[in-house]
Image 1: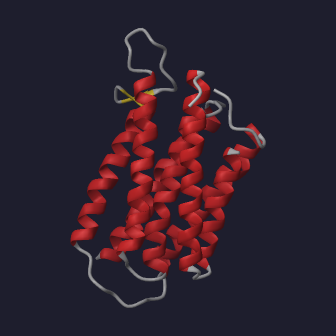
Image 2 (image 1 turned 90 degrees about the vertical axis):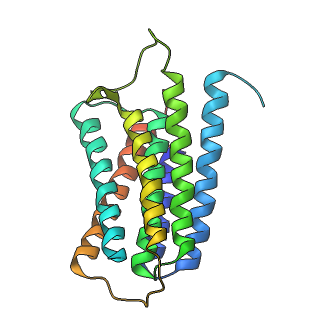
Amino acid sequence: MMAALFVLFFISMLFVMFNKARVAIVFTMITLGLCFLMLLYHATDTLQIRL
Amino acid sequence: MVRFLNTLWIYILVGILLGAYIYQEVEAEIPCPLCMLQRLAMICMAIGPMLNLRVKVSTVHYGISLLSCIFGGTVSLRQIALHICPGFPTFGIRIFGLELYTWAFLVFACSLLGLALLLFLYKREEKRPLNLFEKGAFAAILLITLSNCITTFLECGLSACSE
């Protein structure tokens, strides 16, 4: 899952390179949202809590 | 001036990511999930200045960097909080007396200040082609991101990396 996040950011960078600014912005925002979810997953997993 | 500062920002982020990467390879130490998330935040932060250079300088692009600064700062603060109690084991090496995740927090905090400065300097500019210095920054950040993709996949596979 972590590797997938790196890949998604790499794809965002490729969109920037190919001048697809709007797609890149949307893609980056979605990936950043997934990163927040990953942080949430890590927090609940480490502390053994259920939200 | 603004374009130069944006390029410099990318180079600084590349330098930090490269340092972490070299430490990981030299010490043969698999980074923790929170360290990975901090790296992801730094990579995401670089997308803002990349858009500024490639398309045109815009506040929306700075917004992306701002959000990733907040995200990265949250992650590093969480890691600091996890290891802050006396006698509790820490993670990784110390540089100038501070842990790596504390340095990461300082990087995010300084980036916020840098962002404020760049927003002060903001003015509309027309699109310009990339010069050699800027192309170098693009190549460096793309390369470091790609190498992180490969090594993370090799170390963790498709799972969320273990502690």
